[in-house]
Length: 245
Image (cartoon, rainbow, N blue to C red; front, side, top):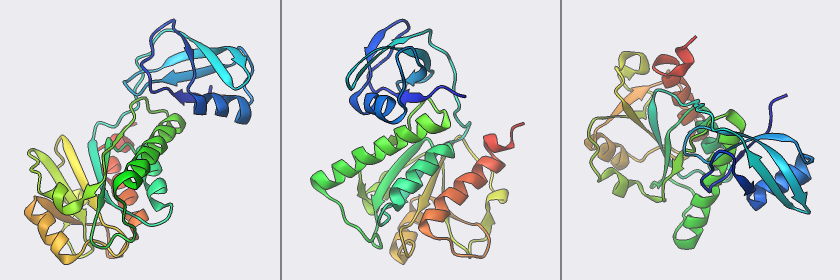
């Protein structure tokens, strides 16, 4: 049985004695019921990981001792940024969790004209912090040691106004001439996915003017929570680590 993995935001170092963050400690003690001496793996999101074990437990406080740093990475050779228009309900949580599992490097949540929900100010900041936690939890589960960044929320039109050089920019369209198999990837890829109802015509035009190329994934219209994940899987299969032995 694999040791449980926990993300610690503070920088870790070999041989250190650390107190686990409160949410991590609570999960270790109350959910997993780990005893003193139990092995675990800790990572701080900066690359690599540390074998560790519980040194002692003081009520809900858990203290651990770290072993030697291990240069273990499970990152894709593709550097993919998912630009995802806001989705309703818990779809954003699901999309971010699965995108991290599929190897996405960064996530940019954007507000599009057809986004059902609207977030601003403190509400937006809290949601972004929550999504960053979702990304970290997904890394704990899937074995990644580098936590993808969830960028601050902004309007799609503002994000598109910023130039990006040397980046392959893609968006899905059932009637597009190009397919993923016909495209030659470059070092970095940005994938734009609309909200429920897709991108509005003016947003599609703005995206094309910003260098986005329409690409098809078969003749069917995919839901927002399906589209990005299917595209990520296709890219990993064609260009990334799904094709490795």
